[in-house]
Length: 113
Image (cartoon, one colour):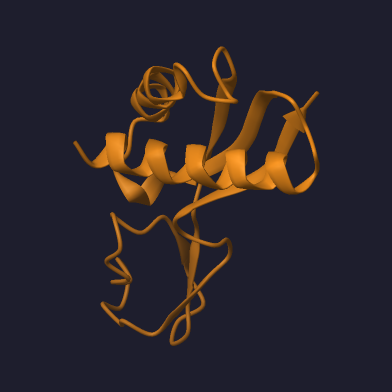
């Protein structure tokens, strides 16, 4: 249940930020998940909604967009899509690459009332 644990972490952070802001309710959380993370955005959202029951965020929506990750090979300059977290250039097999976007998962905004 990797998605469940991630959903709980997002929920905890959203509630904490809502309390700091003096809000009564969290209505939505928006963010992104890198496609290399092998996570289901829908599954994380499902677990978020389930964990939010009975909290300041009950009924809140978690909206995660899937972010495409590209890498640029440091040796041959090829731009490619890495598989999971493996930075292996398909042209020259170099492992020297720079990611064009951040991997992982991030929260961009929390909507509160």
